[in-house]
Length: 157
Image 1 (cartoon, rainbow, N blue to C red):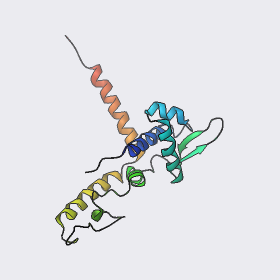
Image 2 (image 1 turned 90 degrees about the horizontal axis):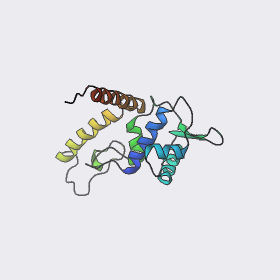
Image 3 (image 1 turned 30 degrees about the horizontal axis):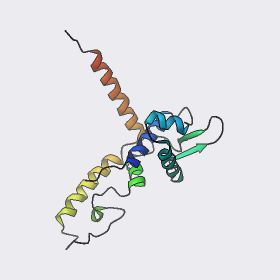
Image 4 (image 1 turned 90 degrees about the vertical axis):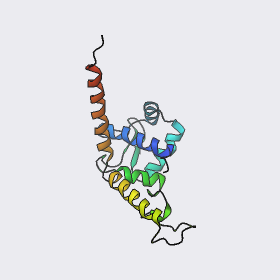
């Protein structure tokens, strides 16, 4: 299985941070880079790409910065990952959007690897396409609360 690239990981982290300030307004790129531990030059490239694809917008001048162009409830992880990485399928012949027969394939219709990789792709897509930025932020908040409470209940002798 391929791993998510640094670009995708940083894109998601930046989008989670922008989700958290969706109601309060734009965030400066320098602040975002520092808070999320993303190299500023790399973050500039990422945000420009996300802006060109309509996920984020920017405002110049005082009170400016980057912000989500749509509600965090509307942006799914599947959409972000496809935008940055391309198709979700682990092999090109299992892709919904970019199908390409593998060079070494004898029969694409009966290929066992393709059959299983389609199932893998479908399972990943089902999760990623129903998971929004807002949902991930809520899960993180819940985990932080659980972690804080778990630490508060520890007794040492």
